[in-house]
Length: 383
Image (cartoon, rainbow, N blue to C red; front, side, top):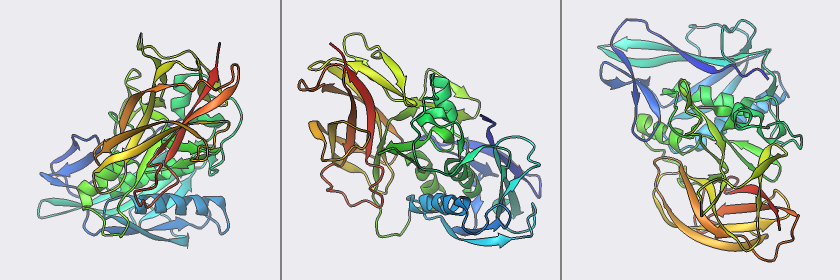
């Protein structure tokens, strides 16, 4: 698999003081002469190349999907509907465009950002996204059953869930983040880090999303949205890989784990259909880890978290709920947490199950997206 990185180029019309700032919550942004670098307005419209995004293609659908994900984020910035069929693709032509290129120098995708300086203040005046046509892209949301990932590094590289192609929507989300003014992130689970491993998974489907930290960065740059629905919670089985360090400017992500309480070590596991399956004993207590995110406006206190045992990868409230917890979540950064849970005693030895979690399982919070509220870790019951 071609795993060349994403990149972002800044082009300055006038040379001036330009720095990169790391904000405490995690997201990064650019700063010139002491002010944030962003668009003067709060929306842009992509012009999509006619040859790259022909009518009826899956790439059109995937590009619209990426735009809708950013438009659900809590910041005021908005991507307008795409202008299709652009035949005048060119960098620095005063148009904001996206296309597939066979001349990309490096990286699987690049966002070229052109700046305008006026009275010592820089603003973004044009952003273009070029994607490498030679990369094996995937626009599918279906999880494969193939075993591909066999190590932490391979899962981080995007080979999880049996896939060996680069997800188009996560890449588009990453580059659109650059287009609005965000920079790379290497300290948090973040779409501006390693985008190929920034996904939700449930019911044999994978789902790209903006995430709490990048959404918080958008709010910092452009303020909060005035849409009616301002709340969204999510949970995933991915986390920031502290032990793996960073991949230069990019955070690395791996799957969350199940741990022995006595030693603090991870429970023994084997790769199973692109993810890790943990061997646990029924009636035994473990630390079970997931990442919880508040992708909306407001702090949510007393959020109801339910834990379930399922016979498949579709975690729903119809499964057997065996434990509940409550949690307070601010809009700040992804919250990776180990919770103490006891494996139910009524499970069958040698059988495989999915230990699932559903955030806001009572449905008490009205959210703009309900498709990201469940996640799982596969388990196998041993004697």
